[in-house]
Amino acid sequence: MPIPAPQPLPPSADGTDVPGGGTVTDRLVAANRRYAAGFTDPGMDARPVRRVAVVACMDARLDLHAALGLELGDCHTIRNAGGVVTDDIIRSLTISQRALGTRSVVLIHHTGCGLLSLTEDFRHELAAEVGQRPTWAVEAFKDLDEDVRQSMQRVRTSPFLPHTDDVRGFVFDVTTGLLREIDPRD
Image 1: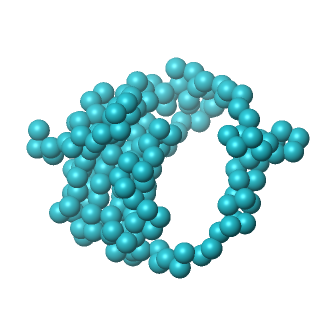
Image 2: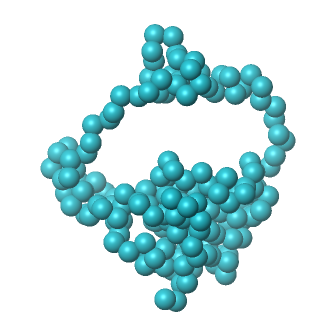
Image 3: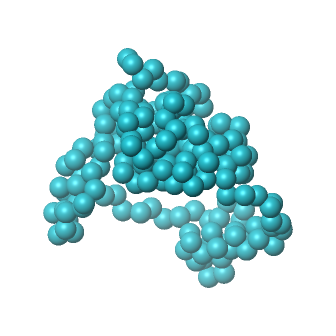
């Protein structure tokens, strides 16, 4: 499965293009300058107010703060492809719990996830293309519910996480915006 080529970028959403066209990164930096012009330090601590860490897919369709009714400072948001619990997610959760006081973990996968259509062949094809084998697993899956259960189990059994009694998993429906809770025992 070849990696698709990037598509041309549309003009910036607010109609203010970077002089000379610019790249998407140039547009982001310009947007940051506008943001910073009106920014005031909210005086927050790095510890999440709600003491929760949310692990979710990186999919651009998931607006987690809006979907969960969260505000800036409420939670730690940890995202990766598929929202799967990998060693790096455990690393981030460990820091979140042990150094920054979180106690609850919410795991969110979603319908229409790209990892539903990938396999480990992706790694092999990538290695053939670039001449180096990736050190990471794709962590693709065929069953959303089962992968959420596996992710919950990885969190609950990690020796590094002291707070594993409030770990819940969900599937977010990208067409309705609703969460469906996954029973860890099914």
